[in-house]
Length: 511
Ligand SMILES: Nc1ncnc2c1ncn2[C@@H]1O[C@H](COP(=O)(O)OP(=O)(O)OP(=O)(O)O)[C@@H](O)[C@H]1O
Ligand SMILES: [Mg+2]
Image (tube, rainbow, N blue to C red; front, top):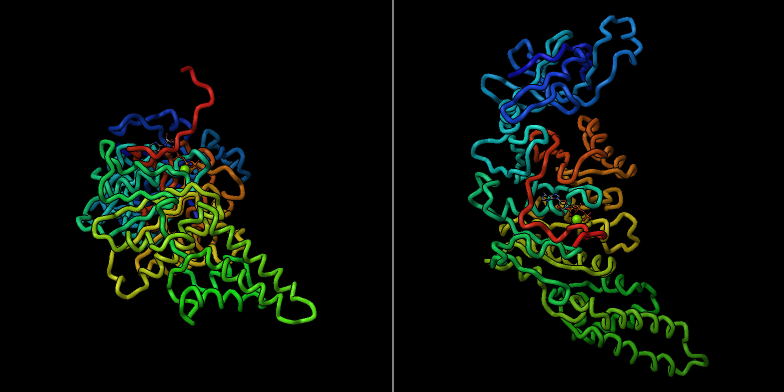
């Protein structure tokens, strides 16, 4: 039952203050789902308006009036002041809720708690009965209340997942994808699903997350770096020079001649595979020519440059881990996107950051080229999950190439059906172009000041008061914000099952 907890005491453009007696805290109320303490931080309140609607708000700060100068003269010293962020308007008769406030409550209006079933109605009323919804978790306090996201926005306008190590990011990614792809009754009104997902699994955690009774479904494809194919034939000549860190006008002509010869065409950008190690041979062949050009002094300057590029080519063609790019002819991403049966591609890529960055560059370029090809426009939407994104799309990257296509996908991908899900423990270190395009955020516990400040600057003004909560969240709890959610709220993410392989190894055990 709703319960009066106080009265409106101050109204500003940004928040309300209500005053109530301290003894409300000693009044737990039953909500049909255990007892709740009334009036505590983060709880919801309702204020009836003159037009028989209710203004709905959340308590975000509580202070003792004695600490407020102007209330020193107020005799109500047994009082508490709660600051309220108003989130929307609820019609108690039709049980409908809309974001935003048209009419503010007036001073001395009564303030009530909200019953659990009204909370549920508030959350659900933003969902249209015929529109798709995905249950992401449950309200932290009212744990029967399901929190849904609009999957067309969550997967249609980029989303990001932040949190300290161990706070639950990988499990959240897993739980959300399981909600979409496994029969868990969390996805509603979505008989037609047009979504292919590619997971960059940089810690080898996700290989079994879709397994049913220990068996991988046939719509899931798992590849590690040994069976990944992202051929260098898809690189333009300019990209090749970037990769080889070569821009010297002394060398470029030699490189160009070698590539032309190996591709058998005058067009160095043409998509033709050649044996990468042959590039080294071709350039080496040019050295004696320079030495014997009949000058008084051999051109040691150019020879030195050529030796350098030969070393770079050797580095790429001899390292096993670069094989996917330099020794393979195919394109795993295109094969996956063209497949009629495969829906999820898990790329299990536990490799050094520089190699991963190159892979991600090639993968994002393939996705971009595939989906911008008019022939493929109408094909399934693509979700690219970037786990541990700070490792390969960082702000500090000096390599111009690295973020180019990811940034492009972040800026333009929505228009042609490519969306990003970015997970990171260091949001302030991920390419800002990417983060600033994420319309929905799921934020787990964060304690680093720089990251907290970064998130505060990223989100909308109305949600800023909730940032302080982030330091005290438990594992699996998160603040969800942005367009995919009814309003920003604290939730417990739905259990991931099977779990990703992300457990913290025990140091001391009793076994
Ligand atoms: N939704 C969930 N379902 C089940 N267990 C969870 C969930 N969220 C968190 N956990 C528990 O928390 C542990 C840590 O979560 P997780 O590995 O997802 O953290 P993380 O933020 O990805 O950490 P890291 O940054 O180190 O990768 C998990 O091993 C699991 O036991
Ligand atoms: Mg993780």
